Length: 555
Image 1: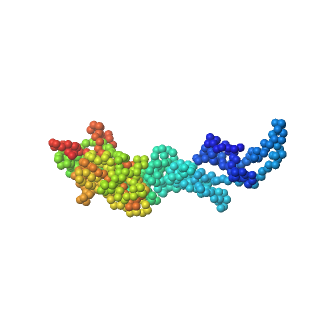
Image 2: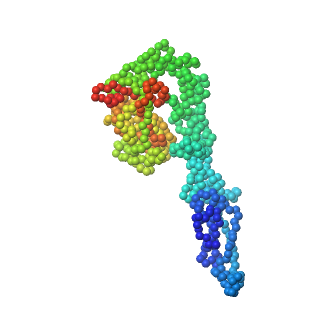
Image 3: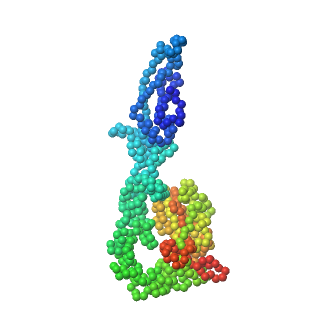
């Protein structure tokens, strides 16, 4: 009945043993046996082995006595039929003093103790790893970002928290949500399949991240506030079902959160007036004047259209010679040809809007550019961690070569990126520029007016144009077009802010960084009308350059 452990044994095969606590146990011998040691799944999670160890009835089968070979003595050597000397074997006996069966609570590797309940007396697991239940057999209500797994010595398989922004008390794991990458973690990473259940406070979405229809979250209000979602206030005649723009991510163009979604011809924040270009409320009939080029488009009460300074035509719908880019935001309607002052003749190119992007080649640096540190990268996410670098001078991400050189085609476009940072305690905010660009000996700085909330994905959009918040670093004056164009003509440095809090632990880019750029369209001039407005890059000038000069702007 000796047994040598063999990993090829089945998971539930009975294991015999002859191990003793003494070398020669003639008396007071102790025998120990284990149900799991030596089995293939002893160090891993095995449902079959778990069921085997949940024995309710135990049978001990005593195979034979240990007689020190005295039972082999023979009375009559000639009689081969009976070798045992019964007079000897009768002198052997045994007695069992005590049988103790030890066990452990079934806690699936997620508890170290299971004290008895003071009322019922039943043992109950003291669950760890964010698990719940009598046997720690499930994740706690708000910790189902990943599916529950049994803990082992090598892998504790801690249940991960869902991100519900304090608007739900339960979440569940959804395999399809994880496959589509729709669920975000509290760290701002789209990983796992946690789906918030029964969102409260008028919120909706996989992570309770948006407001329900007929509610909106104002700009600058954090997701975590209980009153983040406010009811829309829309005119029932001019609005579509009392719906409004729910947040900044769903805003289009100049819309802001809370702006009502109006029927055609109606406008205003509540849709209670005629939209610009319409008149005679509540009929709201269209105005014939061009909105971008006329001064009386909003009222539209005059008999004739009144054009802006650089606009002409009966309906104020075309730029005067020497100007391009008819724009509603331009008080003069059209912008003069820039051409670096070498020509006043140009025309506008209808080019497509493209993007410059790169997730490699980024480094951490200081304002002087003397310190260069390669960042930590996880799943194409750039990460800055103070605990690793221990250097508060590393304020900026330095963009790679894709964002250097002639970037004039990016003029008028947007620099866009997402910020996520984790502070330590309630440290003070840092007052440094969000973006710094430098070229041709000119350094420009941009200071954002946004609120930066910790542990939230903050969307940043910076116009690459003068009069939008850019300042000359040396003169401390607002940037003019000449400075912006000179920098973009030969940009050699682009720095993006990495430090947002003096006691910051970590910052990262979630979706990377993109810069709009004009890409020459292969479509004909007649076919560009079919393109969506936001696919075109407006204001791309092509100048008639003097001799010895070349480039779209004679740069």
